[in-house]
Image (cartoon, rainbow, N blue to C red; front, side, top):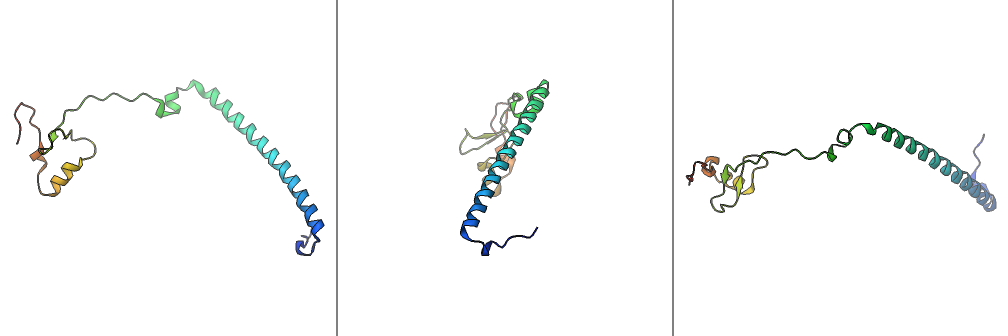
Length: 118
């Protein structure tokens, strides 16, 4: 089949072609939407039938968070004693700044035997 030369086609014929193409596209869109809805329904049925798996196995975010024991602080900011750090996780800014100025991490260690390590 030869491709028609649209530039040479009269306006009325182009408009009829446009309407015919629009009608065909609308029908195909409806059919495609129907197929997608059928596939989605099938996936939902499969998901429900697999619901005998625990929700935690399917969605780890739904699991309750594990309880961790409380960790005592190991380091204290001498200029602001309420700022402490357990030595876990990201190093606090106050300690990073102090270490960059040449101080040692042991300068901030908390002595848990009742004496302070100032």
